[in-house]
Length: 345
Image (cartoon, rainbow, N blue to C red):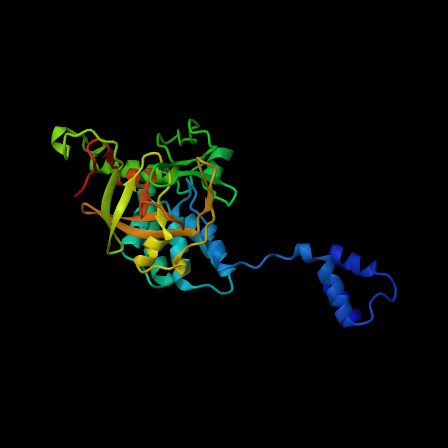
């Protein structure tokens, strides 16, 4: 077996075998161990189901390209849970895409069902691009390092600023906010394929202006005319549960929910996607998030899938909703009027 082993090798591996010192190998097990030790760094790491969550649709990537790339990675995973594969596929899609909204509103219980809906979305996407005489994979200027970093998942080294007891949350973000993403100037659209499809839909509707209504506050919105310094606290329906003591904070870039709150709602730590982010308070205290969870959050006729960081501690509020929820709802809060307004059906 030792003598025949060389017939299976070539290149550097064969040269390594020939260069072995005389009488170094006495059994086939010795040869296997020596070979494994020598070429351990060349072994491809085994794919795990958690790796599927790292697959994210690029800014200018079509649904077909994303679907192909996701399936290639999924095939490399030996054992995976179907529900996790479905969830990973949905999370990787553009959150403003019609396919993401459809899969979120009408969940699929098998990956085959997801592929059927993806195939329909691919046909629609390519038909729109074909009618606009735009290739399905337009040439896009190479993206900057800033754009690529925007798609990365936060690591444990990234820090978040937070103010305990409801005084707000501020996120440390080193990105240059004034930098612009490359445009598809040759087509007159921005934001890659997603922007093209959105612009084409607006052209088809003959309506290119925003339907967002004006939002304003007046004296009638005041609960009382007394001077106050109160934070804006509301009550929301989350996963069919009524959750009180929810603070709205425009100084927060993330949504926080307390571990005790999700436990009272019927969730557990097993339902969390593991994501540890260091939170540093302004007085110097630190805390790490236990993970991340997506909870359907209902307000005023609008139901959104909202992502929360879960933390454990004796805090004043059950939930702190930051700019991510406010922007998702197109909401405008007023601490002075003690209310929040947003468009509803």
